[in-house]
Image (tube, rainbow, N blue to C red):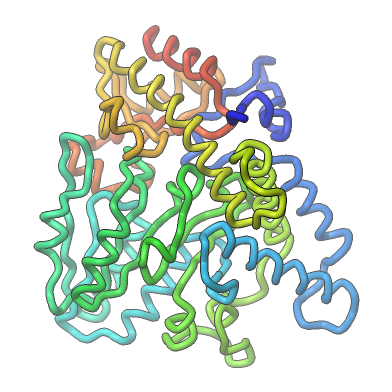
Length: 416
């Protein structure tokens, strides 16, 4: 059975809440945060009713809380195909987790050691490294992009690597222009020079199956509120590194992975929401993934099939979006636009139109209850590289968007 956005839309209550003018909004702001299924909302409420307690107590609510925590870690390990649930660190957001990671790794580095960052990345995978480089007198090497199609310049990456390289930080999929990078190849290049490879998978997690074992990186970070869950960040790391690296923690906290990386009492109610989100993905896999799978197929396979089914659907929509934009006079689209290359991008599109600033276009669309972002969306370097000081308009497709919504958006852009 092919994936159906119309079938899953009723599972997302916010999609049917009218705006002030009585119309239903069109959510194309998904790269900044997706809407959530009702089951996620209900899980947060259920937490407060049945397991609202801190961890480690002998009483019923605390035991239920700890059981939920264990289940959530395991389900997240399934989603990322991680070898162990002990490799799953959950925190308030990806940025906070990456700053903690950068401080830990930098404590082992010496002046003159090198960190490699790219001009494609969201600043959450740039500033954590450039700031510790400043503090510890490390050298920063920048990897360029090809502005023609906004792909990573692999020759620039190879030139940036040396025997002094200690950290290579790259994005899996661009939050600005949608490019998917060859992260497995990059991991091999980093490993060849003895460097740690840190992957920002925030934008790829909703749109492409992630397999940390196949990628071969050392750390991978993502955000559950980008794949239909609550506001949380997730970091996967190799268990040996999570147990051996310096961790900045209070003394009474557990000194084993992953707990030693989770500072303070977590927002457990949102963990329960994350658990419900991952259950939702498994249900999508069971319904749309592959009718030939055996009924006893494990959660990992169903989650992978779910993302693949959504991926196929979203590729059709983004091709329709890009073709429509390129047919409108005065519109320019950044990044990969060739129909036969849709598999090398996620459905996040950046565009501009002559005569209006990106902020003006986003405001006009907002008045029509079509929600998009303008600016640089924290992808500071790529906008500088594209010579877009005002940024661009970003349209991000999610699994609940429809062809009719894309056509509505295109009609409004043409009319501006």
